[in-house]
Length: 527
Image 1 (cartoon, rainbow, N blue to C red):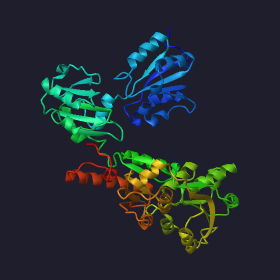
Image 2 (image 1 turned 90 degrees about the vertical axis):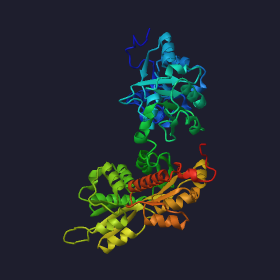
Image 3 (image 1 turned 90 degrees about the horizontal axis):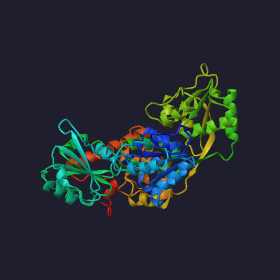
Image 4 (image 1 turned 60 degrees about the horizontal axis):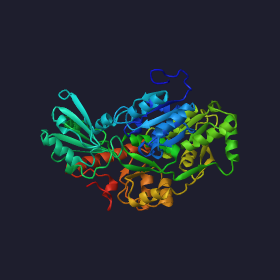
């Protein structure tokens, strides 16, 4: 029989993996879990309770089964394993703690199906960590876990005040739990905390004592966890997660998905929940002959400089190079300029290191400021190639021309207004469902309002520079944040600093910690 004591030796043979998916944050998935998901033929999971990013680690052709919709998921897993398939059964948290490892393992053992346990981060330890509450310290060494979901707990067994209690399944019986602990001898002044939706961006923690916890935690949602003991006092110093400057903020990022990737990741590091909504669509030029002639000119030595003003321009030239079987070596002997860090990064990924880039004002104006004047003794050619969008401004051309250079402005790509986002996104924009909107250009202001409507007045408006801010104000928007330098990284950082100042002011004034979206009339607030 193929049980854990007699595993199959064929790595391709069917087996079942009992995988811990973590308590909520998809970043807590283990490397082994990612590896197993990538190799699984069938993934069985409680889809509604597993973060979508976790499920994205599975193969595109893997079958996804919602365990909530299957009468007997164990039987199904056995069937697939016997057919030679690799089955990944996902559990919230860790399979061995308050999950189904015992029942699943027993059933698989009896069925003669080989299985493997992939441990994960348990909610019982992960949630307290995210709440800033260590379960042990120098003076408290004992931790006791209690599942109160079925009732009938002998609370007298947990009266020792030196032991930390971690209680799950008590969301609807907080008052009863607290009264029971006080009745068996726990002082009513014992520190206690309750955390709901732990390790997610909707996490919320309330801290009180046993006497007041039920009143303070009224209205908290499931899943929630209660922690009782002196270790709760550590939260004032160690509460790192909910203290992030943009914690739980829903931030609209109106850029293409490719452009928004690094910006969204930066926003997540500040605790925000980015929502990427494209406002433009990038398409090839209507007449490709211009670009074809430009690429030939690059190869034959027609130009002294090539200027890239966006990552889209880099992508357009790179794709045209691929059409001709060329690579970065075609830039040999050419000087290359980039308007900013993002464009320079795209060039480096292409294999081209820019010779010129403004360090402060990363814009066309900033590039003109550092551009060398044409010198007929030093520069054999005075021609500059500018592969750009069809709606690009003439600031750069005018500046370079004044410096003695001859510019060839070539349409490398077209920008057209994107299709309107889904109705829920439009309603959230106009109704104040977003906490902030980042505008990275004047066109994103115009296009977003054109396809989705004007952001609600409680929404924080952040703009990348003076021109973008001016456009936002012309459309009747109040600009709250403007980045000190025109880069998306600086813009995100400026928004985070704004959020930190706002949070500090609320704490100083003794106000409830509320996001901008919670300030609108009719916003749902926990009682």
